[in-house]
Image (cartoon, rainbow, N blue to C red; front, side, top):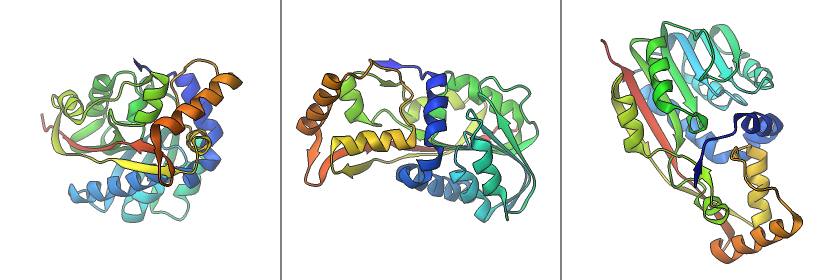
Length: 260
C-alpha cells in the first residue's frame, strides 16, 4: 500500500537525525555528488545569480554544489528549523554573496523566491504530496531557460521494508516524473540506478534508517513482540553473505524551463 508522507513525522525524524545524517546517509551523499555533476553537464555556468535548494537538510548538496559554483543569492529551504545551522556552516568560506535560510514546507511556502537561475534538491521530492503542483510552482519561480535538477527515489526503493510492512511512499517512476514535468519543462536527462547496502543485521538496518530519518510513513506501533517478529522475517527473507541487504533506487532528473 502506498501512503502520503506524514510531514510532521518527517520533520520530527529528520530533526532528530541531522547530527547523524552525513555520516550515515552514504547513498544520499553519492546522489548529491552525481547531481552536481549532472548540473555541470547541463551547461550551468560557474557563477549563478539566484539559486534555490529545496530540502537542504544537513547541507550535503549545499556543500557539494558550492565547490564548483558560486552564487549571488542562495536560498536554502527546509522543513526542519534545525537545518539552518548546517546550511550556514556550508556557506562559510564559499563564494556566496547572500545566503538565506527559508524554513517551511516548500509546497506551502509563500512567497517563493523569483527570477531563479537554478532550483536543486537532493533526495527530497519523494516527500511531496503533489509533484505536479511542485513543478508548476518551480516553473513560475525560474527564469525562462532556468534549470530544475533533483534526485529522488523510484518504486524499488527500500523494497525490503515495503515487503515486510506492507506500506511505502508513493514513489513515482522515471516516466511518470517526466510526464508531470513535461508541460513546463524540457527534459535534459532522467537517469536511475540501484544501490544495495549490506548490513550485519536487521537491527543495523533499522539503526541506519533512524540515523538518516528516511522513514516518514506512519505505520503500526512497535511492540516488543512485533519488533522481534520483524527482525526474524527480515533475516528469513533478505539474508546475504554479509548479513542482510537494503535496496535504494535513486533517480536523477534535469529539466530546463521552457522559454515560453
